[in-house]
Image (cartoon, helix red, strand yellow):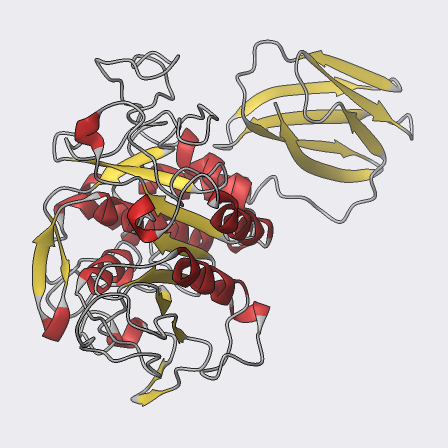
Length: 432
């Protein structure tokens, strides 16, 4: 793709433009966003909208409005229960621009050939547990504009969530399960749920306190500046509000001085973890475009994002984890790297599962200190073991019924095996 203008600094920092240079821009991938709505006629967004078709528009299955009654005082500029995308704030338009935005003169989106669909979950920046839940449920099986005839096949591949639900909006430890179950269901259905960490980092360790950033199955994103340093506002872990102590964020991404789309065809620069999360959602689109067989494999996509991130260490310790450890509660696994993630996704296409008969039994899985491969056919075989980036870790021939390998030296993570013999080829995924 020939670029008419320089890309935004965040796109260059995560090397998304290097991914474009090899012809991968998110084609055939659908991203979803739930936010304050979207200015769907913005020049950077209009032709990316899944409801757009050569000047014709169809909002069924592409737009949903969860704001049926006012939450904030005064008249909403979009109205209520709108039948076409509308942004009553500008925040949503900015986040969507970072995911997919591009026009003749502005390269603001990480995945400019991806399509988008959207749901309004906030009234001028304020939501409730039930508006957030309504959008989550709609993404699981988008409906027509009447809220009928749900179609799971129209669900997006990834959802960006640049919002939090604090106690002032009705979320607290007594009802955390409402949105947690929704996130769990989305992940189980094959949708990556990307969530911004929040902007209360100045209060220190344990400042990620609100749904949906606190959940295990949310892929939580903190914000960094141009020096790859955590932004002062970026909320950090561990998660203490639910007593879990789990590590968060999962990764970090650019979130300071991010230029993107706003209302009426304009562009502005915002800062916040609301800006970093969409960078990650855009990279998910690039990963799936690079290897469509990864669509729906949420654990694997998240593993790729984490293991290809640029590791970052912190001078402070939060929770029981040292800031020098990777991952840690300030940066997670590090700052995302779109090019490394896409290269890993491409490598995985060489070790994907095949339809060969399972003549090899592999156990235990998950494994710890050893792996056993049992050959039911007693034929000469050759084992290849790869890490998530496609690097060959082990190559070994054997002809007996059993092959046992020591795996104590392998770090925790995801691995892939491939076995060749005259009987066939078998491959699969392993987890330590």
